[in-house]
Image (tube, rainbow over all chains, first blue to last red; front, side):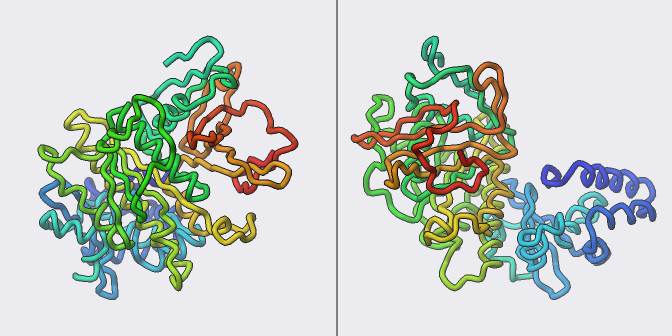
Length: 140
Length: 294
């Protein structure tokens, strides 16, 4: 997904990855920078990280996708190469108002990836098709 | 690829979708009006959005698919809701014979759900028995997005879902193709804007178009030309967008986009010629929202 973010956000995530791998925590200055770049969804995304809500799902074909378990219990599917989330905040704040770079689910996927905190899951190719097309997103 | 001293010379770049359009323009270009040394390319991750009325969109997509399959060796997957009953354009060139249609796989999803499943299932292909596609074309994405009674916010999200899935699928296929030393996968999507379908205000923002532009970095606008109040079989085609790079237009000058005149001949064939000078005062472009009014 990195190619979809501005350079400053990519650099920030690289800094996060390096720092977290060394210290296993996020320094205050990085938290402030995250909040500055990604806005109000940062704290909610960090909550999702704390809850280990992000799963990196893969199938034998090699296809990979993120699934994020939202607070309501719904699973949100986020693609790995570009930004899309079926949540209302993505539709409103990102697509319609163009106010945010990403929603909390996509940011949580970025953060978990950088911090190495994604859950891992293997599914069949057929199930991956259902996930990608949005038909399996409602089944946590 | 040289067509003579005064002819259009388009370098074919192997890195992006717009190179296929370059071949189409060159093959069907008028050498009488061509000049300069033009290089069209786009950023590797860029995909192309074709914006115009559904008939010219489909003709251009069909020509592009046929050219890509027969001349460039692309494995083309063509998604469209309406079954193709006849050739949208008369293809007279010997190398674009109708048997080349067999090189294109047409898929006819009727609903949004079918389209999403068809695209999402492409990773299930076994390359040993069915080669991975290297060009994904969706004709008339509005037919899947702009369904009656669907709220605007849902339509925007639906449009984003389709193009994001296409993008993600192309990225996956590209990675697999590189392992097998095949061509990377490209995406081209056509859209018939709402204001054109309903004859509404041409300056009203099209919320779906704004979303499509977010994902598809090269835009190919096609506007009907009106002479003396009457619509002609002529269009202005304008390539633009952040993913497009055009160098060497005219005498070393650089520009952000490139304009072409498209004429449908009496036999139905399309002819492309570059527009280097401002358009004649007697002509009017029917619709323009690309900042290209003349």
